[in-house]
Length: 196
Image 1 (cartoon, rainbow, N blue to C red):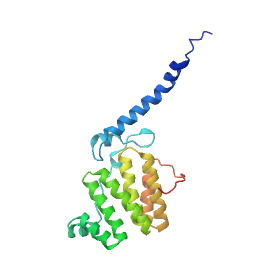
Image 2: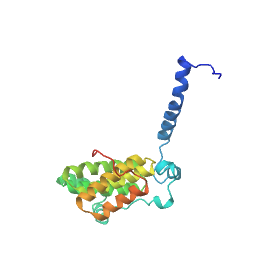
Image 3: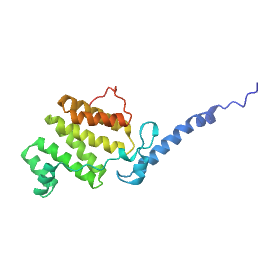
Image 4: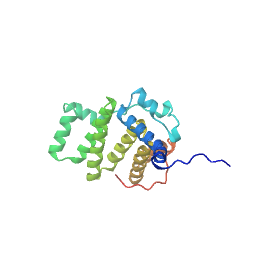
């Protein structure tokens, strides 16, 4: 049996590392291209389990702010002034609600990064105040942002945390929604997560 020439030294390392370098380059290019939820290019890039394209039914429209929070935000001259007033009054429960409502407003307007920032603020305040329902709802919204961005691992993590919170609250509708989303996107159901 004939053997080809043996590749050693620097050439061997280059050959071994080339696929990893190409993968890292592709990841960097994807991160640099950015994109926003709602962009056709981004929607096309979103993939389900094992790279399967997401169906149009899996692309729900951006959620609307809750009616009560929308009315309060509009009556107060916008969410910013209502949020400032709630913060000044030290009403952290309302602050968590308003961050969530503001995030939904930003999502509806296509401001994905701003919405994600508002959702994280909502989660921090809701966790501090024990407002579990707002925490779980914000997790569902962050999961949707991750899903549309093609990051199903993060989406699955948020869905699982939301499902756990809704289960603790005995909120069947929220729990069932999170479970359905996990099942539709092929999320593992036996992950052990740390709350983050």
